[in-house]
Image (cartoon, rainbow, N blue to C red):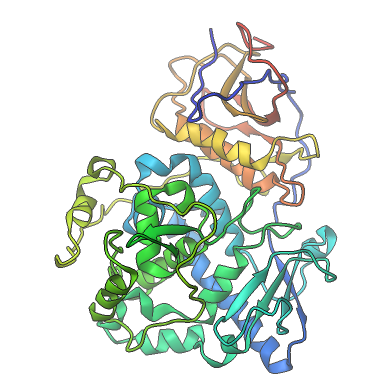
Length: 490
């Protein structure tokens, strides 16, 4: 039987893949992805504020994740598995339609999960892996100038760790997360506008996602998360804040999945929805045919809008490189319940949407800490390649997994250096009901439990636990030519 696989990417050479190596049980991996922080040039009061902002940013990032088994989490935390529900409005608003973003869903989930696991202080795992982020209250790069709240210092420096600088305005002009929440509590008008959530915590989360080197990467990959530019009103505009982030998600899901404010405002929207039981539908998406000034004027007049426009961290309309000028995705790319929002024009009232009541997430994979064996080394696949390889599994998640004979191998997905191999431990017959989604859950567990952002690699395996579908699932390295005929070991 020839191998079944999917690929989003044309003109990619599909290399030969080393046969998987069935293995006995091995010690559980250290699946910790926590990030610790050090301080430089901060007063005791500033350090106290920054420590609190770590906690507040984590609360925001955590709101972006939904538990598959909510009813079990409080009593049995290990039974809950976190996911991003890409079927709901917040994810569509900020990461685009599922029909377009499947190749990037693992990347989005991974970044949110890492941000949700940051913490103040020093952790044993972080000490062992030398995994820190330096927080400075000194204008190391001379970029504050009274107009910035904070910035990521992109160049390497004497500290030896990624550096985030917090300007005086961060402490004097931005409210705390707690103050913002207290102000919105009990005010239904403010609860419908996302702009009211701007705080030190949202800035902290934005800067955290910029980290693109060292062992504490939050938004993994060769490029990490950046601030993309796009054409609005015939001018390049940096994609900051709600309306612009929503527009980017409607034009280019790849850029939306690596734009800092798309993550930050997605997390803020989920936080507001969970706390106040209504989705904040304002500010609405910007219109690319209108000027920046016209869009900002409409923002200021929408229900619940702040009394003054937030101008911290804004930059002139002159972006680097080639700003995005893609057209809006076709209406049919979106679910029916979301389409009224796409149809609405600039001057139309913002329609109320009825989201699907059923959760779009499920999880049938292993426990990341106990059910995964890590084998990550310098020779393992690239993280970025695996993100794309796993994305192929999500094209048709309900499709039945390929049946095969005991000791045979199925190459379930592969892109460049990364392959997902299924080593059959028994014959898979019609009694095996495994789907592509089940395979993806195991691949995701290996990815989250075994990745090493320091060298950008990931590798590992897990025993597939579905009844009548015994198998070993491995993330391994490809190495040259495409497979010929039967997979090795079949």
